Image 1 (cartoon, helix red, strand yellow):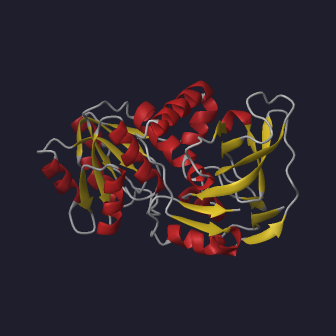
Image 2 (spheres, rainbow, N blue to C red):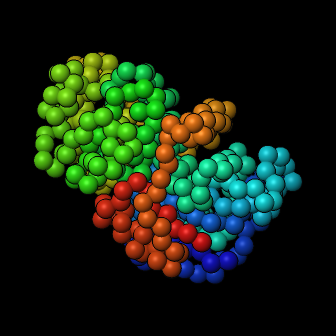
Length: 324
């Protein structure tokens, strides 16, 4: 099979498309033909050797894909050859074939294309876990989403609105904010032109946001924490800015606020029953039309470098996918 291989840590454009051995399923694993794979900022970090968990080169990157089952292990009970699936992988998605654990696999809803499926599992799974288990979001609360036009940001806006929250979307351009409004944002802040804390305070009559969803980090983090309401919850989702912030911890005391880390993949492995419940609840919201998973651009495997540039140059709206 053809695969996108990282031979040494570096930038995405240093990878190469190579021939790689076809995968074979373990007892509880599924092999599937990859039809589309989603790109995430975490992939950029993994390729650079900067992710929380390092994979030693050579390896095939990519953590989410949609496709068709071609083989199953002897202990697999929920899927069979020919099924359409979405897999949450720990690497291996950027290839014509991949392997995924049965417990990390869900059926691709009939209403979704392979491209939508590949753009769905990580972004929507991360955002729902963060808002539900991490923040215990309640209907009527206010959620501030940073990087609201990115993959997890768009999903967070979409999900928070479906959960009954008031959503303030923050991004760096009017084009991105227009995209966030399509996901359901009630209010928007262009933080390239406005001070984030003051804008949030103005929109909330001085109260602040009950939940901060932050996949960006960097200089915005302290402003966002200062915009937190009493008993607010600050969700640390990622660092798309490239900078890990150092926050003044006294702010949590002054607001009796909580800072909560969100690491979806590891949480799902440790809590398979809750993962399954979250997955079912998300699928019901999709089927009911309350969520609108989307992707903005699709690239072929041979054009992977252009696909990654959309992410690294921070031009992405929603999700970018590779197609096979």
